[in-house]
Every structure is written in C-alpha cells, then in structure tokens.
Image (cartoon, rainbow, N blue to C red; front, side, top):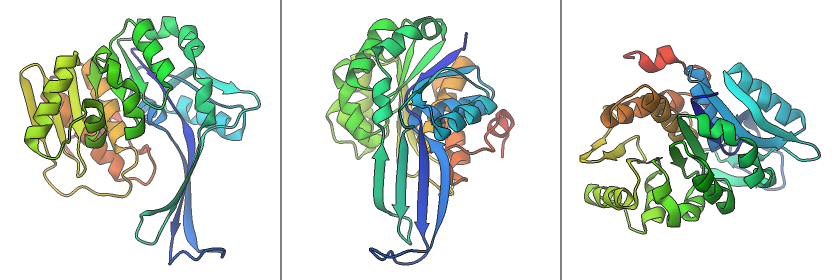
Length: 302
C-alpha cells in the first residue's frame, strides 16, 4: 500500500500565449503549450517525481488524453490503479488564452468528469486510503464526496482547497482535516475573516487550530507562507525575487513537499521551508509540474 494517497482532479491543460494584441474573429499568432494539470494530479505527480510512495485516485475519460495522462503519471512513479478511465466520457480539459502581457483573456473549463469521482469511488479505494499514512484531498471534489471522505477515512487528512469557490464546501467540517494548505484567499473564505496583515494571518491560524486542524500552512502571493502547529508559528518569505515562468502549480508543489516532509518526520518550520523549495522549482517551468523535479533537486542547497 502507498504511504500517501491523493484523491482529486486531473485535466489536460492547453495554454495559448498571444504574441501580439488579440484581434477578435481573426487568426492570432501565439505560442501554444499543452500539458496535464489539476490540483490532485499536480500533487501526486510531484510526489512521484521526488520518489515518494504515492497513489492517485481520480477519473478521466477513456480517450487519448486519459490514456496519455495515466501513462505520464505512471512514468513519474505514481500508482494509478484507482485512476479510472470512464468509457464514453471526456478527460477534463482547461483552455487558457493569455494576452501579450500574460494575463488571461479567456478561460474555458470542461470538468464534468469530476462528477464521476463519487462516494462509491471512495468506498472502492477504502482499503488503500485507510492504509495510507496521509490522504491528500483536492477541493475540486463534490461537497458530498469531501464529507464522505472525512467520515470514512481513518488516515490523517490533508486538504488543498483548489480554489476559493471550492473552499466554501468544507467550511463546516474543516476541523476534520489534520493538515491544510489554503492560499490567502481560500483561507479567508474558510475562516470568514479578511486576511491582509500578519496579525490577521495569526488570527486565521488560531481560528483553524480552534476548529481542530493540527498543522496549518497559508501560502501568499510572492512566495511567502504562514505556518502554525501548536505554539509554533511564523512567516517564511523568499530571500530573493522568485522566477515567474508560470504560477500554476507552485502551491500544489508546496503541498506535495509538505506531505513528503511529514512522512520523513520534519518539523513545522522544516516543512514550510521544504514546501517553498518545491514551489521555487515549479516556478522555473511553464508546465504545472516541473519535469526537473526530483529528490536530488529538492534536497540540494541550490
């Protein structure tokens, strides 16, 4: 059985970067980049690439994209026995069109397949989930499935909320998670408090701890992170301006590193630093998961 099991979404990602001003109803020159992403996918693949013992529970279409997704994850070292390829369904996809300065001009999502990740999916994987040392939960799952996971899984649960709209799903039972990693916006939705200052970060951390969350990480734009476990808390900031090839996936890499570090017995402060190292590596690459991610790169002083 795997030490870490990730349950969540996976999708094909197509990003088109415009090379000039975008003109409606005309052909536009650009650079088009295809990869796989999704919070659950990114966390699981990063874990596989750094050599962690990881399994992925999800659903994709029984199509070209779904089969390629499974093959890529297996190559990265992820156990995909519970990545179901659903006949007659499309693999989730996201298309982003970015303007000349890199801001989104249009985003289109097709994530209907996520509805195939059901309570029955959880029950089928129950033995795997309960034998894991940690189960990582992606907030893109339905509220029904998220709640079922908290009621079914005996292993410690880690939550990455996925996005602000999804964070709301777990607000009433956030204390069921042993460890959480929201960004600042997601944390604000979860605790119902504005978070702009260091004092407000600490107030949010106390609120989560009062609900029963044992280890809390709140990531911030620019690469910083607030962390708290018991009486230990602090804010870690990068020493220098980070590269920004692509902000997608940096938070997911952080989550993967925290899970790997927790298995390895790191302290809360070490986990925060280890997570930031993974985020920095991811920011060097345009893909949501940097193919250069490895145990050697993570443990090096570079």
